[in-house]
Amino acid sequence: MKILHIVPTYNPAFRRGGPIVSVHNLNKWLVRKGVDVTVYTTDIDTDGKAPIARISKDGLENELILDGVKVYFFKHSFPRVWEYWRVGFVPAFLPRHWEYSKDLHGALIRNTKNFDLVHATSTFLFASILGAHYAKKFKKPYIISPRGNLMEPLELKGAAAKKMYIRLFEKEALRDAVIHCTVPAEKEHYKRHKLPLRDSIVIPNGVEEEEFFDSPEKGYFRKKFNIGDDEKMILFLGRINWKKGLDTLIPAFAEVVKKEPRVVLVIAGADDDGYKKKIECLIREHPILISTNQPDRHKSAFYNVIFTDMLLGKDKLGALKDADVFVLPSYSENFGMAVVEAMRMSVPVVVTRYVGISPYLTESGAGIVVDKDENELSEAILKVLGNITFAKEIGEKGRKLIQEKFAMPMVADQFFAAYNKIIKSYEIRK
Image (cartoon, rainbow, N blue to C red; front, side):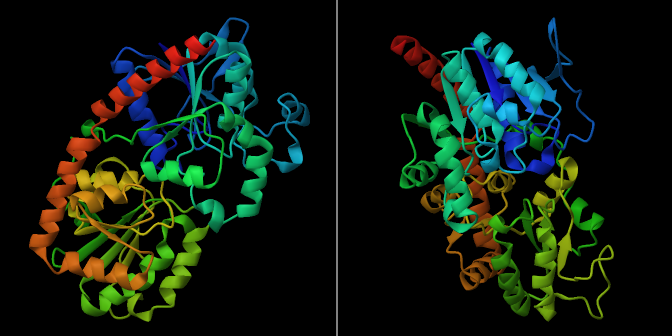
């Protein structure tokens, strides 16, 4: 079985968030199960750490093997008019950041026919549209993983432009695709928008156990960021983006500080489109969070709030190990990979009901699910911080849930079976 996975960004472009990790983990495990997996991606945010693939008369050059996965990083570029026209696009309607690559486009033209199935992870970017176009041209089955891009944010931000884009371009790509959703709620949102749905699969993201083997000793993160052992630590782990709900977390945290003054909020994530400045302004609207007589932490203006930028490896695991509670108050989240990672480390979690994985938490009691409301959020955080027995109980339930539902080998088995079924079904239809 030969699979082509098209994704705009890939390992090591970790600044792009959770899919970077989960997509590679899936591909790695598929290779372990005997699948021949090739990835076409771009060099965006790889910071020169990946070789640039080129098309030559002999084929593709500069292949990188990552855990058995064959990865080609193509230089990204802005498409010229004739390249839009080639697949029937109108350039005026395409977004400024389409994450396009001319050489990747050329590789699709040349090589799509050599694969059994095409899997595109993204929407509103080139991967889904070009992947679908050439899969259909060469009569190959294909899967599109929207990764939450077709959930409720369509109604919250940029709705008109997104709906126009879907109508003009994405709808045709979706029409003959098998749509991959990570949780049932994502499929319900998809159907609610009345988008084309020929077939679908629901398979969650998986947790790679190997990533937790090198966890540092407890207290490592606190020591590095000058957080006292007697202070409670709340952890937010994710991009600093409007969608993540920090506008609810900050006022909720201000209420927590009034009752638990020895508490720290760690915001660990990369700034997304300058949104961090808006959050800093919001923090300043709550004087209780601003440093006065207390010593600054790492030159931060805020005593109770620490920004760490994106955490990877030992630092990320250290933050999870030292956290008293993990919080993700998103407006919409198709899955919530950071929540799963926190639960794997037995950290009690508090999320909004808009986080895709939240029904699992409600059903199993493996976390607290709240509405998008600062009072509910602060009360849930205080409940965890104020009851050690309760916190330990939901943390243990969280870890058990991960072992039973989201272990990477099980997830890879589900994809392996789905790929086989889709390929066989397509061959019968032909």
